[in-house]
Image (cartoon, rainbow, N blue to C red; front, side):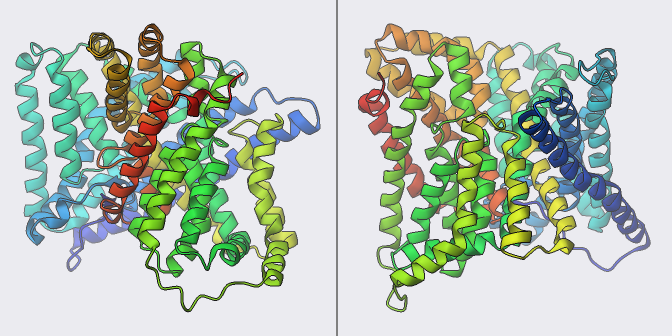
Length: 623
């Protein structure tokens, strides 16, 4: 997988010159509003926190307005990402093709999203029109103001894709790619009567076969998921497609996900204000003389910040920009960095306060406080297995030229870094003490970083704010479009009856509790690779937990195994959405992480087996 790139342009022709000018106009039309939306979200949420906690007069409309603006931010961010070539795609196989085939597949990677956008824009318009009958409770305005982001964003992406095809310059290449996409779509359409008689075999055809074909051909991940879902529902069911758009809306505009762009921006602020440099200098003075020292810091940092935002993408966005530049400077390979970042995302799935834990407790009736207590030690067990791999990989590093810092130097760097090191504790305290929600807390971090940059570190580059805000919108749009497409796919799987059939099949397995536990691990790894954790929990939690209880498995023990299994699937390539988020957040060529992550995934599985085999790890501290 790689960041989507425009095919190199030959000598300009008149029509390509016009397309280039149109592309520039589109850039100004979309990037400025997207950047302003990031600012607006920060202001609205920070105003809500300040009014509620300091003035004791809650703004009842702040969350509602933030949610409305968020969908616009997600869609305009996706447009910016498409224009800039920053939607995520797998290119492991594409890179091995001949130059001619590689160029052809690069154009297919533009043509296939064009097909999806042409398919979705009509239902998106219908959905927005239907939302006109709903009035928002706090603001008292039509919900179509929010829902209009879907058709407008889809229309702008459609226009951007057309402009990109025109700018390719090779007519044969463009026509060939369009012909292949049209031929595949036509073949599926012609086979529709036959597909309707195949029942759940269509799940394999669309959600395994078609997704694999698209992903391995280099089509961006979000559009691969969207094509499979729309194709399945349009050709094998009578479901109105605007319902699917509604599920995409639900997946992309969940307010807890607003922490993604805000933590992305916070990470950039930490770097720009010099806070990152201060923290890294201190950490390097502590562990710089240890082989792989900053990799251990990465594992620990993810453990500390995990769960603060409610989103793994936001957690990674808070850590990666701080640590990665120094780790690269010390010789760490980019592929190993993104692999370890993704692995730590899976490792920390059970660390409270985790939205996955809260959701699981809500839908299964398991005590949330018990889940919070039980989730700490499993994360430590997996951290130890990851650190073992880090030790093995860096055991022969040459540190002969590395000088161990003196105690005085460490204390001096600690004093400089103390305001920066306090940031994660300020953020966590704000959540635990009820000052701010998991979504709002990122704005407290942003305000803290701005004040620290201006007053303490005396470094604040105002000229960088605009590109930072645009980068935040583009990266967030790329991530959120994947989540929206994955949510609609999860809903389609639910409607098929697949979830109930799977639960019944697992209950009938021989071997009792141990076989059920082993099957659960395998099933939830697979589910985690195609679904976000929350949709999978909502779908399968109420079905699987009663079976586990009947087999004598403790609820908290089973919850930890289920969540960690989904985490492994979620962050394992080639289909794990979390892995793509890690690649996007770290801005590292995702193909580079494919090989290094295998060792980390193996370590996670070893840790998962230990958690599954030793119930005390999950239940030992319960009262």
